[in-house]
Length: 358
Image (cartoon, rainbow, N blue to C red; front, side, top):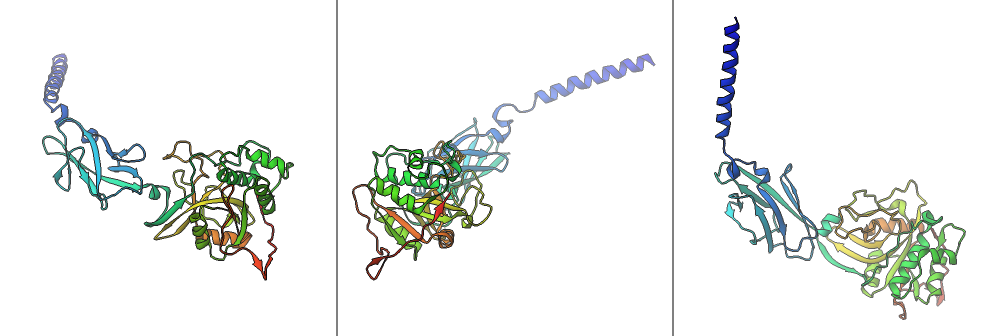
């Protein structure tokens, strides 16, 4: 019985040795490795931030400026030793120029040609990444060489109802680069005890610092916004944000990113540009209600989520018609506002209802 036991142990030992020898003959190096590691890096000239290579979904995700020619883009990549790359069964090398106006599939193949992996290159524009739909027709942004965005959540006791002082400060800073006051200074000027600001407070504060402004009706929102932005004039709107769409994706810039529980959510926005696509007319706005939140992943590091939001004119029409259907047009410091239809009835200036924003 004991001899059978030792014999069994010997057989197991011999089997283990033979198995190890068999394993040692398995391919090593590039031909034996997983192709999951065959693609080391990938990029396209001009991309806005680091490529995401997804080896689970087999996608290569890249964001590019919408101003690039997608028919003629240069790819750059590094592969593991002896791994080759092809697009549409045609070998490619780093530095090749590819047409990305259509879907592009990037295939890497092992040296023995027995294994291959194909990636879909998802090259999207910054506008698509931001959430805008349709092809761009025309656009203009009244950006400056300096920052003029402020978050109304500045740590003050009135932060939750501070959009009026904040938007007014942004408008003046846009109009006058030398203006150095902050929203807290505007708050101390009117309603220092707290509370919602009115449209009258906004225009009075603009006038206080010599910023020319005029009030116009919003009978044709798209045309009014485009005409004034094209004349290098920004616009303040007072509206009910309950009627503006919601989008909580941290990388996207479309729609509001905060909840509004019921109608009556009065708010001020600064309109400083537009983007017209085949799908929508978007107002490019500075929304002061950032609450310290930032876009992520962001093309611009630490960009507040209220900066460069895109709200559709359809939503804005509903929101302004419900709350305050007027535009407060602002010219650069030292210039007069040029608008097509000042509010006059028989030569007498029409009384404009006062509205409030939180």
